Length: 235
DNA sequence: CGTATTTGACCAGCGC
DNA sequence: GCGCTGGTCAAATACG
Image (cartoon, rainbow, N blue to C red; front, top):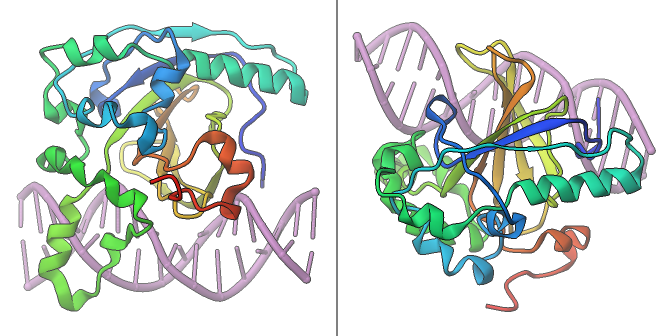
């Protein structure tokens, strides 16, 4: 098994969407910081928090070609390239009129507008999914409180892109209509409940679909400190 | 030995 | 109500 965080990078294409894989619309990115702010702590996404659910539609693709060598230095450089490719223009997103909520939150379209619960992730308690069975009513309510999600697909030989955060794999599942198993990752930072799913397209095993759920309450660089810091001290 | 990953089991939601 | 499916847990295992 591999412990690496997918920092070895090969050639890939990157396409980003705020929808489920089956109806992807892709974003053209110019500035990685913009995209990363979707994952970033509340302090940096405060402006975005009201934008994510907005109707938007994007269509474009970005291709980047990082160095093929995999030394730490080049991997880091490649990581920057990935990050660069992951940036996007907020104005473009919010000004798109035809993006509907179903597209934004296709995996659970009924609850799209409950995303203002996204702060829950920052509260360090994301256990709504395992409430006691004796409290089913509450379970159902809680089930609706989904984290904001967005996904992007990459053409890559590696499954886990280096997005600057550190992830721990907690599950893998074979999903229907897919030849490849889906992997589940959770941010290793304490109090950060961001998750991501990674799977490969059955039609094209080189295409990797990555779906993020929730927002980090820390910056990527904080991951190195991980549990050492209380990320809420600034709030 | 500590930490990360693997993997089977379990649970809840959803569709029929 | 039942079966299917996705998502998560947690014990076992692997690795540094």
